[in-house]
Length: 370
Image (cartoon, one colour):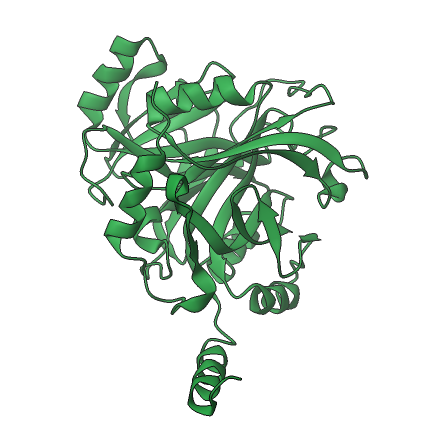
């Protein structure tokens, strides 16, 4: 029998956080691939994403609106870099042959075109990648407000943008961190700014420029005219993983000289490319109501509980005004030390409070060593 004071304490805890709705940060970028282990090896060696939160082969039962109306067998790995930033959810069809994009993607095409990765020193990072034989797209250049950055392409055709950052969860030997944001094409900038501000908290405009940009010339379609808007969040993220994921930014491109195409036109979610941008949240039910009221209802909803390998939680999908997929994950269980069976239950703690640094850093013992 539960003693009355304890029972009342549990009720008080549940009631206190019942209507909470918050975002802890970018949890991961979804990357469709033809070889999940080959992709993970490259992301480990180049971007330091060497801790697997889960590594699981299963059937995607709930993504029917985006997988041809039927469940699909798949293999997925969620890998993170403990220096800080979001992770990679590397995703491969098991039975179906993945379909590559059938045209040359250009800036402004609808969906996620580029993933931003943060680094500690842009010059050192560039030289390190050059020495490793990474496919660099041009030299270091500067964005509209003078920040240095450069672009590269992985062996699977995905473009990344490296940007310097001073915000780190750990201060190890790695030059790079994890996912810092993404670059997306849109058709109506004002509608998109409203979506990313109201629903995902990107309420601060870093710059809003229209024209031709020298730093984009190395990219497909990069010599064309664009409206280019960089946005970030004015308020620090809160929640269990907020210190690990850190700050982030999104850059939106509206094309003027070509008609943008949908990157996943005629293809399935999970086919090669960037399939979704995922945010770690608290308050799935509150988000469900809120997103519906804002005109962006859940298109996929796992319900309250869903197991993903050695992790557990719930997940939902919404679409931005151009159909780009945004995933919202509420994490309930995460492996800290797999060898010793230490799995953290997040339902028993204050959802606003970041997890202790030492606890998350203990996940380094789960690293995959090459």
